[in-house]
Amino acid sequence: MLALAFCWPIVRAPRTTVLFDLGDPLLQTWELAWQRHFLFGGGDFWTGNIFLAARNNFAFTDSLLGYLPFSLIGGDDQAGALLRYNIVFLFASTLAFVGGYWLVRQLGGSWHAAALGAVVFAWAPWRLAHVHHLNLLSTGGIALALYALARGHGFSLRHGFRPELARPGWALAGWLIATWQITIGFATGLPFAYVLGAVGVAIAVAMWRGRSRITRRLVIANGVGVGVFLVITLLMTLPYLRVIDLYKFKRTAEELAVYSPPPQGLITTSHFSWLWSDTALTRWTWEMDPAPWEKWIFPGLVLVMFAVIGLFVSAWPRRTRILLGAGAVLTGILALGTSFFHGTFTYLLLWKFMPGWDALRTPGRLIIWTTLLLILLAAGAVTRLAQVLAENRTVSPVRRRLLALVMVLPALGAALESAPVLPYAHPPEPPAALSEAFAMEPRDGGTLILPIHLTGDSIPMLWSIKEGFPVIANGNTGNYPKSWTELSKISTAFPSPRSIDEMKKYGIRKVVVIRSLLEMPRSAGDKSPTYDKALVRSVKGLPVTRTDLSDVVVFTLH
Image (cartoon, rainbow, N blue to C red; front, side, top):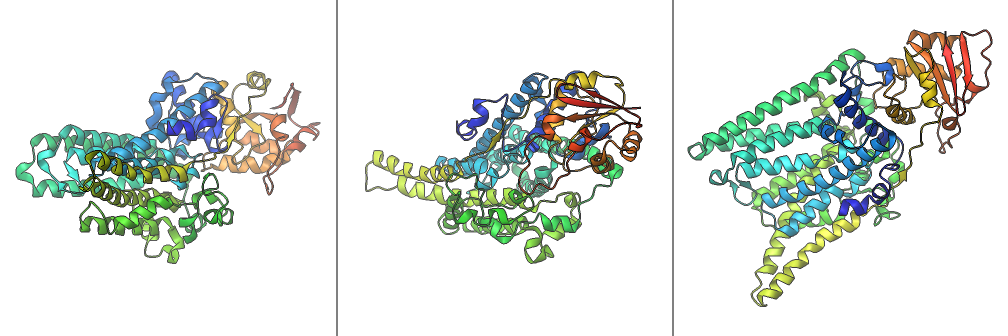
């Protein structure tokens, strides 16, 4: 119900609306549609129709492979693809809520504390800045996997590891849920894999110490679960390793510095927050370009307040509180990337020495782990305060229960400061003549759609779904092959002898100019190239045939 209320624009019109903008949401809509195309049509899963079908291009970004079962929802047209994406979006938010709740309950928190954990884990203020990043909002598997592993090994923050309470089935489920989470993508999956490595070591040590009380079933469950996790994780890394080898994609230290949040990012929230919009917490919102949404990492005032209380008043032992507090501080520092004393002895150590870490360019996303540790600290405080109220012997049992209900206020407060006013957009319908343009001869080779643009290419990607995924030169994934970079530069001069020669070199047989995209209003400060001259330049003497259709112009290259 909370997800439906917060995401009302897509609930009201799920077939024609996406939250935020027409960039990443359409990319992820295309990804989910490509999964359906693969499921029912076969072919190479890791090579989509974008970027001229460049090999392994589906691994240019997080694959969202774990959502493959949702391919059964919706059809093969644009409306069906948008419906599928919006359902997955609501599912991801709901799963994060459920995961946060049950993790806190398993670790010993009261239902009041679990409600606070659920709201924050699903709707912390920093998450509002990422409503266009389905892969980042898909964290429910993290909390659920940790919950199942804790339940499977009889672990809680109050009593530690209790082998007599172990449930091997839940232990196995924990590793399998973690495996599913990895298949969503490595933006959140890579840090999670390292956390699971630490969890696995802790489980092994605890089982060795209590080996006289450990059942054979628990050992087998962990062995099978870890084996499945490692095999699937390895298989998931292979296409990404091939991409690095084929295209030499590499993050640089300079790029890392650009995307590192400044210290004030920890107290800066998105202007999408209904409560905090136009307050001191949005003071630096637009002073953090580029990609400012990667730097708004405020975890929430209610959460921080009760986490601080939890350092001193808590249901957890002192040692546990100290470890949780230290972990929250450390991960908060890591989330600042190179902004914290240049990151020399913090984030850069991970970036240089942890395998795979140098593929991550956005340190601020580690705030996920800061938030989770703060949730556990706050849960200890809320649980203890609820216990004190419930144990008050000066009032009747009925009043004690009513007093205990007061501790639901933290969850309500967190929901209030997370309540969003989310922007939304309506993806344009494909031009009426686009199908005719794709059907025109020649049908082999690739098609370049103009304008070609960093984020604007998500629209042609969306339109290609209805057309059966024809090979197009356009694409928007965050990583771009050489073909896209060169074509986007040379296309500003199209049609010209040099641009035509360059396009033919890459196998382009048709160039389709979309009049409606040329006429779309540009935002202030938009310095992207324009392509409107393609419709007024003469093609006389050029190896090109121009065909004017109702709302598109097709150039056939000979």
